[in-house]
Length: 439
Image 1 (tube, rainbow, N blue to C red):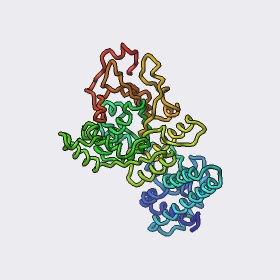
Image 2 (cartoon, helix red, strand yellow):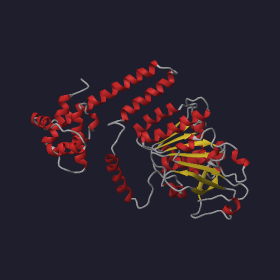
Image 3 (spheres, rainbow, N blue to C red):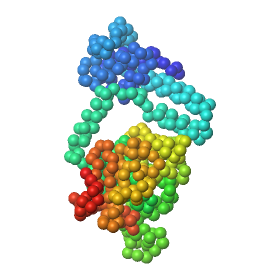
Image 4 (cartoon, rainbow, N blue to C red):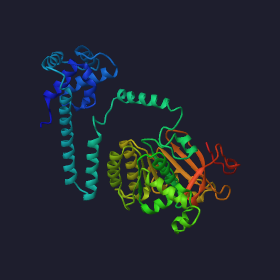
């Protein structure tokens, strides 16, 4: 098969001119970038635009559109195409032939890039990661990466209309926490949400509570990369949280001799019936995470991706800051590419200990300011163990699509979970004592 089926391109355009009612069949297969010949590409671009505006499509309107765009229409050639096309009955077959040639041209371009990567410098595993990325883009890049505003606006209006039917409800997946859902409208694509806290301060617990909400209660595909804990350790914690069972009883094996034995049976059943998947390989690179996630979500459909935690993911870079920047940037790119929400955890350093007000700041993120830059939402956890013990502050120090502020959760780490505070809760005199601005 040649990589330019000139006759098939003519037949598609001619078939549309003969029977405009066949256009929806063609638009399911092709965009204007699939045409190799520039004239054919511009003819089809005019047809797409006229269709979007629900205007008549014929030789005259196509030529008028091209003139409006500053193009010189070849009227005689367009008339020749219409005359030479005997029928529109096989237009879908012609469209698929054009698409096949377009795909082969992209495949050839990717092959040339792959050869360049293979012959270049670098480790073999790094080359494989780069090649996997190229192949993934070959699957997802149907029609090019550049889109006209009119194309985006068309789908955006549909999104607005769909949102209007929700009556203020969530735009994404529920986190399982009312206050967090109200502030964020849920975990939305393609947002990168970062939960940051010091070691042992509850960031994995909060993330797994959100996983419970999405994978168990909402039954959405959820993939967790656990680089620190094994899958068994993670499910110990999730079982405790789901069943509201003291984690110690599960770890020491005495749970079946307690009143919690019915709860653990129910929790195990819920987890077995969930849509949760865990990858607990240690030392994963950002390229391996991207490749695995692409394959997973292509198979299971859109859902939630969780990475615990950023500092343990390997990446290229001359120092830790550059490596962390590669990881956070790679996760944000993955969220956009797959159109999924990504939840990732990050460590904080101990700078806050030296301040009077020990509530964390974005500058406390360990190793890289790039995390703050790439994040759409940055949640920093803090507990005032002296003035307000047992209450976890979820400080939104960055929220790209909402208002920053602080929400409060009940800390139940013995059950490996957080719980909702009563609506409207505010700690007494907290702002006066600390000077911290909660709004």
